[in-house]
Length: 272
Length: 125
Image (cartoon, rainbow over all chains, first blue to last red; front, top):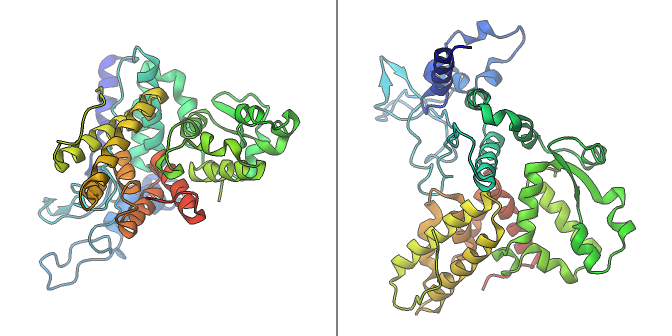
């Protein structure tokens, strides 16, 4: 493919990552979807933009008639949130700048996608940082922005080896049985994970047969495995300054398993 | 950035808050790169700042609440955890918001923090 075509494609895809990306969604986008597909699910930004049911600011207010999220005071808003007044072009309401709630007050930080390194980072640490940041962003973002971001990643040569790794990290939470079904299959980009940590359980006197029992092993995405392992090994205010691993060293098998299962739920691997 | 152990007793509270933010933002970077030894050092530096604020007249850890709106989620989370003893309601609400944000790994850690609070494992002091 000619390089100028790549550049054009990158430009097209990057448009979908703009805060006002809803501008690029055609109002008649439903025409381009297969029969029966819900336009609201395929293009959440569009659905918000044009839904006749979307709440508007009551008449009499300075913003009267404009679309609103229906909430009070901002709250948690998405990348394509439609908000501000004084943010129209040619009479079309645009997806605006993030409202004050994002990155200010009590709102979550601005959720910009991580910049894609065009060249392969030279160190493992730098590669890991990017891959985990990208996987994290993709896990909490969906819709056109995520599709466009993945498309941009597909155009970067060095990332071709990591597509499956990042895709695995986007798995939805599964049941315990589903996670156990993948054990021992040596799936690339997944690891077998001991709910009760194996090395430390053995060090504190638990027998190997108990540690390696099928009930104690699940198959989880590799990046999530790293995340949970890192959490176990680092000091934590919530464990009174100990690492979870240190906290558990004199605890029973049941206590260790409870923490292990809770961590799988909280790190979005296991369904609650 | 390297954060060396320094004497904190003459540093104004607002500068301590700034130091806390820089340290915890560096923690986030260390977590992303799985640099656990580096994280452990940064954790010690963070606790030194928190202890210094606690030691001051009136327990000045509430100053860390200014970081609830910091753009970095790790900064927000550590500030919330370390203000639980002085502003329990606000801090808990902040941790709950982070836990439901899906912003991993901080959302996972926040969720575990809430569990530990409810089970009495974590007793903020």
